[in-house]
Image 1 (cartoon, rainbow, N blue to C red):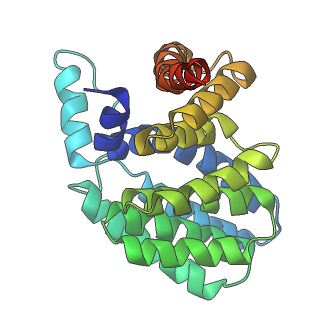
Image 2: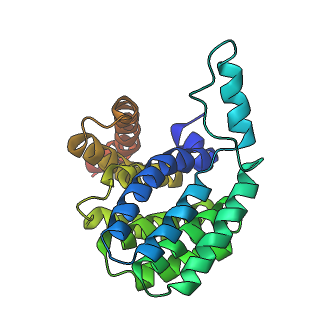
Amino acid sequence: MAVSDWVADNRSLLLGALGVFVLGFAGLQLWNIVSSGRNAEQHAKYYDALQTYRAPLETDQAAEQEGHEGHDHGDLPHEAEFKDAEERNRAALDKFEQLAREYAGSKVGLLSQYYVGIIRQQLDQPAEAEKNLRAVVDGADQPEIRQLAVNRLADVLYLQGKTEEAVTLWSEIAEDPAPTFPLNTVLKKLAEARQASGDLAKALELYRRLASEFPSDPDARLTDARIALLAGQVESNETPDAEESEEESSSE
Protein backbone atom coordinates (compact mmCIF):
# COMPACT_ATOMS: atom_id res chain seq x y z
CA MET A 1 0.00 0.00 0.00
CA ALA A 2 1.35 3.46 -0.92
CA VAL A 3 2.02 5.86 1.94
CA SER A 4 -0.47 8.32 0.45
CA ASP A 5 -3.17 5.61 0.54
CA TRP A 6 -2.38 4.78 4.16
CA VAL A 7 -2.60 8.45 5.15
CA ALA A 8 -5.95 8.79 3.39
CA ASP A 9 -7.37 5.64 5.00
CA ASN A 10 -6.17 6.59 8.48
CA ARG A 11 -6.94 10.29 8.59
CA SER A 12 -9.04 9.88 11.76
CA LEU A 13 -6.22 8.08 13.55
CA LEU A 14 -3.64 10.67 12.53
CA LEU A 15 -5.77 13.62 13.57
CA GLY A 16 -6.66 11.90 16.81
CA ALA A 17 -3.03 11.37 17.74
CA LEU A 18 -2.17 14.97 16.96
CA GLY A 19 -5.32 16.16 18.70
CA VAL A 20 -4.23 14.65 22.02
CA PHE A 21 -1.14 16.83 22.03
CA VAL A 22 -2.89 19.96 20.81
CA LEU A 23 -5.76 19.51 23.25
CA GLY A 24 -3.33 19.21 26.16
CA PHE A 25 -1.56 22.32 24.93
CA ALA A 26 -4.88 24.08 24.46
CA GLY A 27 -6.05 23.31 27.97
CA LEU A 28 -2.89 24.79 29.46
CA GLN A 29 -2.85 27.87 27.23
CA LEU A 30 -6.55 28.56 27.59
CA TRP A 31 -6.41 28.21 31.35
CA ASN A 32 -3.49 30.65 31.45
CA ILE A 33 -5.51 33.12 29.39
CA VAL A 34 -8.60 32.75 31.53
CA SER A 35 -6.81 32.86 34.87
CA SER A 36 -5.08 36.10 33.87
CA GLY A 37 -8.42 37.91 34.21
CA ARG A 38 -10.18 39.09 37.33
CA ASN A 39 -13.60 37.45 37.49
CA ALA A 40 -13.19 34.67 40.05
CA GLU A 41 -16.71 33.33 39.59
CA GLN A 42 -16.28 32.87 35.84
CA HIS A 43 -12.92 31.20 36.34
CA ALA A 44 -14.28 28.83 38.97
CA LYS A 45 -17.14 27.73 36.70
CA TYR A 46 -14.80 27.30 33.75
CA TYR A 47 -12.37 25.24 35.82
CA ASP A 48 -15.24 23.07 37.05
CA ALA A 49 -16.30 22.40 33.43
CA LEU A 50 -12.72 21.48 32.53
CA GLN A 51 -12.55 19.10 35.48
CA THR A 52 -15.74 17.41 34.31
CA TYR A 53 -14.34 17.09 30.78
CA ARG A 54 -11.22 15.39 32.17
CA ALA A 55 -12.89 13.35 34.90
CA PRO A 56 -11.85 9.68 35.25
CA LEU A 57 -14.03 6.97 33.75
CA GLU A 58 -15.07 3.66 35.26
CA THR A 59 -13.25 1.85 32.46
CA ASP A 60 -10.06 3.80 33.17
CA GLN A 61 -10.26 3.01 36.86
CA ALA A 62 -10.90 -0.68 36.23
CA ALA A 63 -7.76 -0.88 34.09
CA GLU A 64 -5.79 1.02 36.72
CA GLN A 65 -6.94 -1.31 39.48
CA GLU A 66 -6.06 -4.36 37.38
CA GLY A 67 -2.56 -3.02 36.96
CA HIS A 68 -2.23 -2.46 40.71
CA GLU A 69 -3.39 -5.88 41.90
CA GLY A 70 -1.49 -6.92 45.00
CA HIS A 71 -0.31 -3.36 45.65
CA ASP A 72 -1.37 -0.54 47.90
CA HIS A 73 -4.22 1.36 46.19
CA GLY A 74 -3.63 4.61 48.00
CA ASP A 75 -2.35 6.29 44.85
CA LEU A 76 -5.37 5.42 42.68
CA PRO A 77 -7.55 8.25 41.35
CA HIS A 78 -10.78 9.22 43.05
CA GLU A 79 -13.88 7.17 42.33
CA ALA A 80 -14.95 7.58 38.72
CA GLU A 81 -17.92 9.84 38.07
CA PHE A 82 -18.85 8.53 34.61
CA LYS A 83 -19.20 5.08 33.09
CA ASP A 84 -17.95 6.06 29.63
CA ALA A 85 -16.64 8.94 27.52
CA GLU A 86 -20.03 9.78 26.01
CA GLU A 87 -21.63 10.27 29.43
CA ARG A 88 -18.71 12.43 30.53
CA ASN A 89 -18.80 14.47 27.31
CA ARG A 90 -22.51 15.18 27.63
CA ALA A 91 -22.07 16.33 31.23
CA ALA A 92 -19.21 18.62 30.24
CA LEU A 93 -21.15 19.85 27.21
CA ASP A 94 -24.01 21.04 29.41
CA LYS A 95 -21.60 23.06 31.55
CA PHE A 96 -19.69 24.60 28.66
CA GLU A 97 -22.88 25.49 26.78
CA GLN A 98 -24.23 27.25 29.86
CA LEU A 99 -20.97 29.19 30.24
CA ALA A 100 -20.99 30.11 26.54
CA ARG A 101 -24.49 31.55 26.92
CA GLU A 102 -23.94 33.20 30.29
CA TYR A 103 -20.65 34.86 29.37
CA ALA A 104 -21.14 35.39 25.64
CA GLY A 105 -18.51 37.72 24.19
CA SER A 106 -16.06 37.30 27.07
CA LYS A 107 -12.91 35.16 27.05
CA VAL A 108 -14.62 32.56 29.20
CA GLY A 109 -17.57 32.54 26.81
CA LEU A 110 -15.35 32.06 23.74
CA LEU A 111 -13.24 29.37 25.38
CA SER A 112 -16.37 27.55 26.50
CA GLN A 113 -17.68 27.74 22.93
CA TYR A 114 -14.36 26.26 21.78
CA TYR A 115 -14.84 23.25 24.05
CA VAL A 116 -18.46 22.93 22.93
CA GLY A 117 -17.11 22.53 19.39
CA ILE A 118 -14.54 19.94 20.48
CA ILE A 119 -17.14 17.90 22.35
CA ARG A 120 -19.65 18.12 19.49
CA GLN A 121 -16.97 16.68 17.22
CA GLN A 122 -16.31 13.86 19.68
CA LEU A 123 -20.04 13.14 19.85
CA ASP A 124 -20.05 12.79 16.04
CA GLN A 125 -21.95 16.01 15.42
CA PRO A 126 -19.71 17.67 12.81
CA ALA A 127 -22.21 20.26 11.57
CA GLU A 128 -22.79 21.57 15.10
CA ALA A 129 -19.05 21.44 15.85
CA GLU A 130 -18.30 23.45 12.72
CA LYS A 131 -20.86 26.08 13.69
CA ASN A 132 -19.47 26.46 17.22
CA LEU A 133 -15.86 26.66 16.10
CA ARG A 134 -16.61 29.19 13.37
CA ALA A 135 -18.22 31.37 16.04
CA VAL A 136 -14.97 31.27 18.04
CA VAL A 137 -12.86 32.02 14.96
CA ASP A 138 -15.06 35.02 14.14
CA GLY A 139 -15.25 36.30 17.72
CA ALA A 140 -11.72 35.77 19.07
CA ASP A 141 -9.38 38.75 19.19
CA GLN A 142 -6.43 36.87 20.72
CA PRO A 143 -4.29 35.00 18.16
CA GLU A 144 -3.79 31.99 20.45
CA ILE A 145 -7.51 31.42 20.92
CA ARG A 146 -8.33 32.07 17.27
CA GLN A 147 -5.67 29.72 15.94
CA LEU A 148 -6.66 26.93 18.31
CA ALA A 149 -10.21 27.25 16.98
CA VAL A 150 -8.99 27.46 13.35
CA ASN A 151 -6.94 24.31 13.85
CA ARG A 152 -9.84 22.37 15.35
CA LEU A 153 -12.24 23.66 12.68
CA ALA A 154 -9.82 22.40 10.02
CA ASP A 155 -9.83 18.98 11.73
CA VAL A 156 -13.62 18.87 11.58
CA LEU A 157 -13.66 19.85 7.90
CA TYR A 158 -10.93 17.38 6.97
CA LEU A 159 -12.74 14.48 8.62
CA GLN A 160 -15.77 15.37 6.48
CA GLY A 161 -13.67 15.12 3.35
CA LYS A 162 -13.45 18.91 2.86
CA THR A 163 -9.71 18.71 2.33
CA GLU A 164 -9.11 22.00 0.50
CA GLU A 165 -11.01 24.02 3.09
CA ALA A 166 -9.01 22.35 5.85
CA VAL A 167 -5.73 22.94 4.04
CA THR A 168 -6.58 26.62 3.59
CA LEU A 169 -7.13 27.01 7.33
CA TRP A 170 -4.00 25.10 8.34
CA SER A 171 -2.00 27.13 5.80
CA GLU A 172 -3.24 30.32 7.45
CA ILE A 173 -1.68 29.20 10.73
CA ALA A 174 1.52 27.98 9.07
CA GLU A 175 2.05 31.33 7.38
CA ASP A 176 1.71 33.38 10.57
CA PRO A 177 1.64 31.21 13.72
CA ALA A 178 1.02 32.71 17.14
CA PRO A 179 4.20 32.62 19.26
CA THR A 180 2.91 29.88 21.58
CA PHE A 181 1.12 27.77 18.98
CA PRO A 182 2.55 24.24 18.35
CA LEU A 183 3.28 24.85 14.66
CA ASN A 184 4.81 21.40 14.15
CA THR A 185 1.39 19.76 14.57
CA VAL A 186 -0.08 21.92 11.81
CA LEU A 187 2.83 21.24 9.46
CA LYS A 188 2.29 17.50 9.98
CA LYS A 189 -1.40 17.80 9.17
CA LEU A 190 -0.71 19.90 6.09
CA ALA A 191 1.92 17.49 4.83
CA GLU A 192 -0.30 14.46 5.41
CA ALA A 193 -3.26 16.14 3.72
CA ARG A 194 -1.17 17.04 0.67
CA GLN A 195 0.27 13.54 0.56
CA ALA A 196 -3.19 11.97 0.77
CA SER A 197 -4.44 14.21 -2.06
CA GLY A 198 -1.55 13.17 -4.29
CA ASP A 199 0.33 16.49 -4.23
CA LEU A 200 3.61 14.77 -3.39
CA ALA A 201 5.86 17.71 -4.26
CA LYS A 202 4.04 20.02 -1.83
CA ALA A 203 3.96 17.30 0.82
CA LEU A 204 7.72 16.86 0.44
CA GLU A 205 8.24 20.60 0.82
CA LEU A 206 6.21 20.63 4.04
CA TYR A 207 7.96 17.59 5.52
CA ARG A 208 11.31 19.22 4.77
CA ARG A 209 10.18 22.40 6.50
CA LEU A 210 9.05 20.33 9.49
CA ALA A 211 12.42 18.55 9.68
CA SER A 212 14.33 21.83 9.34
CA GLU A 213 12.35 23.89 11.87
CA PHE A 214 11.63 21.09 14.37
CA PRO A 215 14.60 18.68 14.37
CA SER A 216 13.70 17.46 17.88
CA ASP A 217 10.07 16.69 17.01
CA PRO A 218 8.95 13.35 18.55
CA ASP A 219 8.11 12.05 15.06
CA ALA A 220 11.40 13.17 13.50
CA ARG A 221 12.31 9.65 12.36
CA LEU A 222 8.97 9.17 10.67
CA THR A 223 9.33 12.56 9.00
CA ASP A 224 12.78 11.63 7.71
CA ALA A 225 11.42 8.34 6.35
CA ARG A 226 8.61 10.12 4.53
CA ILE A 227 11.04 12.65 3.08
CA ALA A 228 13.19 9.85 1.71
CA LEU A 229 10.19 8.02 0.26
CA LEU A 230 8.56 11.10 -1.25
CA ALA A 231 11.82 12.40 -2.68
CA GLY A 232 12.13 9.18 -4.64
CA GLN A 233 8.51 9.29 -5.78
CA VAL A 234 8.71 12.95 -6.83
CA GLU A 235 11.93 12.28 -8.74
CA SER A 236 10.44 9.27 -10.51
CA ASN A 237 7.35 11.28 -11.44
CA GLU A 238 9.51 14.00 -12.97
CA THR A 239 11.83 11.65 -14.86
CA PRO A 240 9.41 10.57 -17.65
CA ASP A 241 8.75 14.22 -18.53
CA ALA A 242 12.45 14.89 -18.74
CA GLU A 243 13.03 11.83 -20.93
CA GLU A 244 10.12 12.82 -23.17
CA SER A 245 11.59 16.31 -23.63
CA GLU A 246 14.95 14.81 -24.58
CA GLU A 247 13.29 12.53 -27.13
CA GLU A 248 11.41 15.46 -28.66
CA SER A 249 14.63 17.48 -28.89
CA SER A 250 16.51 14.65 -30.57
CA SER A 251 13.69 14.06 -33.10
CA GLU A 252 13.84 17.71 -34.12
